Length: 274
Image (tube, rainbow, N blue to C red; front, side, top):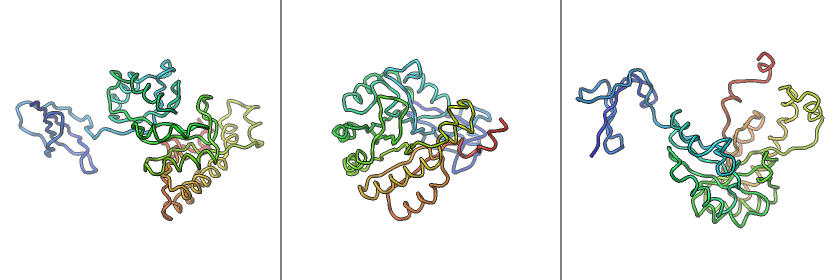
């Protein structure tokens, strides 16, 4: 039996930072005592914060195939250094992408002996792979990822409403989420502005209007209601869609949503000053 006792002036417990001693036995915390313990061997971490490990459910590790971007070893070491003890890898931008049982098993095999934190995996839905969804879920993917606009990777093309309708009916009985990058792109005048000024932040914003995201989210709400499939909108940037999503959730539709720090801390007008 192994034991470890650590102390910090700032231990996150019950929602606040306070001095505490943490007792660990066989790798598991069995007691947290307020203040400093008089145990003979206490590792004192001073004012460093001790807190539960974080979970990052939206990570692109890119292995196999694009390890010059990132791989399991460096990604999970970086996660551990930053306090993230669990992450979930997206089905792109690895090559091959994780859209079949074979590619999922291949990714797991490649990840062996390279991971330093807990790792889970998302599978992906692309046109024509609905027959793979159930087998990936049964093999252990935590959910399925979809793009309704170009993903930036040709190997992971976006899906249509009919693709989603069929796929969500397969996913729904497993009660795992469908994660959606929700944009429905269309031709509009703002795209020319980006071509004329490719390094302008405001031109870039006009090229990706809120309406793209708003329309895609309305479509996903309809599909989720019809198929009863749990649906999660990733990195929401349009505030217009918050009331619509809130109403859908209140109506019992299985929707959830996430956003990103940059969408909460910055606005377009401030960007002009940077």
